Image 1 (spheres, each protein chain N blue to C red):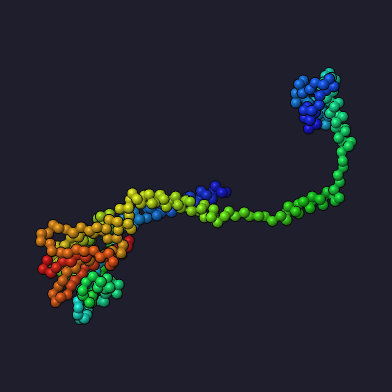
Image 2 (spheres, one colour; image 1 turned 45 degrees about the vertical axis):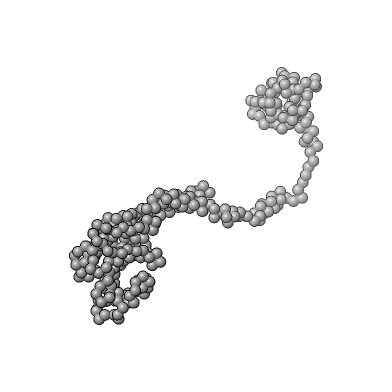
Length: 153
Length: 175
């Protein structure tokens, strides 16, 4: 009886081991979800545009810790799942578009297009909790931000 | 029993050891014959042997005398209770004894469970050390970025904020 109990613990431990070690690879094969957001930064009050939303406080605080603008509004937000080695195009606005390509263990490659023209290409490893922000200034001392954050699998 | 005792201790009348001339099986046969434990055929064979062999006959007489001496002088011990009552007391005392379940110490039990998991964890740690770059949760170790410099006159600025967990690529207007 004792031998049986001891064996069952080992079997359970081995089962746990295989679940733990195999699950991440399975999840990785399923892809990673990214939240892509186009954000508008300004020192002015909220413009009278229906597509602008208040940015969540956490993200706003992060941006305010780095950038000088007082107010940030969300123009668009999309969650896109990118599979292994898959390339996804995300249209953020009429002028702005990004391409996200999974590079496996090398992270992700992000291409930023403005009015159909490639503006920037960035390769970045994005662990959970890290974000990639591609940003630039615009007219009237405002700014735009394309923020890409992995949200999980 | 008597035979064994006799074999070890008793010399014959001439003073020599009978053990030297008679093996244990024969001695035990004589003892069994004395105790009426043999079949009729065996008993006949032993009786014939005893008639022929004086040494065996001497042993038989010795054993018979010892047996009669023991039986005749055995102290009779009587239990002051009936047999059934005496054994029932023993039975009750056995049944009344508390069954002590011995639990191993907590640490020992914990160790028995922890050992397999520790082994599994050690194996995982070993594998992770080889495959860290393939595990999504461990990508922080290789969290480096690469900016495409293929475009000439790239005036973008890149920096990483550890506190905010952000890599910022700033692209100036007109770019």
